[in-house]
Amino acid sequence: MNALTNKRILLGVSGSISAYKSPDIVRRLKDLGAEVRVIITSGGREFVSELSLQTVSQNKVHDNLWDKEAELAMGHIELAKWADVVIIAPASANTIARICHGKADDLLSTVILATNASVLIAPSMNQQMFASKAIKENLKILNNRGVVTINPGFGEQACGDVGEGRLAEPIEIAKEVANIFSSSTLSGKKVLITIGGTIEAIDPVRYISNHSSGKMGMALAHACIQAGAKVTLIVGSISVDIEKRAEITHITSADEMYDAVMKKVNSQDLFISCAAVADFKPSKISQKKIKKDSNLTAIQLTKNKDILKSVCLIKNKLICIGFAAETENFLANATAKLENKKCDAIILNDISNSEIGLNSDENEVHFITQDKIEKIDKNSKHVIAEKIIKKVAQYFF
Image (cartoon, rainbow, N blue to C red; front, side, top):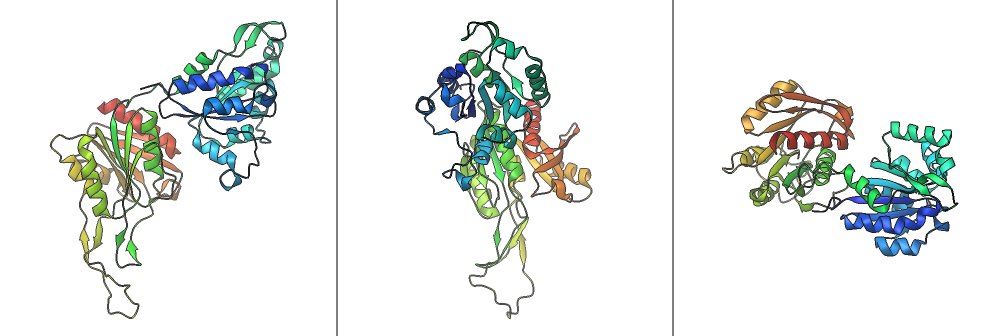
């Protein structure tokens, strides 16, 4: 598997003479397995053609913050969410200054503000400009924010000067991007994840369900793919974009989720039960809408099959990770679930706290195994997912 297989790289090309190298950067990234999209600034267009970048990337080149053809006319948000990594190569002195100070007056600078992806910059400019205090301070500010600088080379420049400021070679830039994903901790592993809530019909109109959004499960899917795994998702009711790089099976009820999991699970290395599966379903489903004036005053319920426990009881057991969404006696309930289900680890989260509840964008969890309990402090669900998968890989693979 190539180092960037299934990775989505957004390349920003700004105004520098070395922009002529950007098609080669695209080619090198694609050689490593990446899908590449390009944003070109008005300055970048002076040095390289959009047609050449489009031909090499095999994707539309983006340059307009106000693109009416973009989804909901919000191309900056669409691209910001799409990218796993944003790299600006070449990064001119002007572009570095603008992203350093939070400018948002063109597509590239706006995407940088809107993305949660890793950001890399490959400076390219005259050696005296690169040596200036302003550039050094701007780079320091960006580095402190987590932006990675790919250091320029030393040599003769287009203007005839000799010094530091030449754009790093395209192959080196591609390798630096690949290093972002050097943690291929699940490379070659097959991972099955259940996501979202289930819907248990009462009649053709009404049902029993819950507030699960699917955000945590989808973040875990993303983290597993980033770690090199092949991911299969069993997806219930969600309110989040689907990870398109995974194999998807859509279901509605708990019974359908059980059947889908049992059909897929024997070929997997890791099972993560993140779905909020209804514990109960109506014993009988009315084929007609139940009228308000009917005599029905109670709904008889019956238990659904326990998906996590069923998977944990498989003879040739794969690694099984469950979730415990609790509102009280958190650690005691989660530890009891770990013992009862016979799974390898439980991820505990407090859903009584709205800031880290089912619909929130953030979470705070405890990673619980037979040997230890480790807290993962509050952060975005994407960061939480990355930390969970690192622990899973560390302990079980």
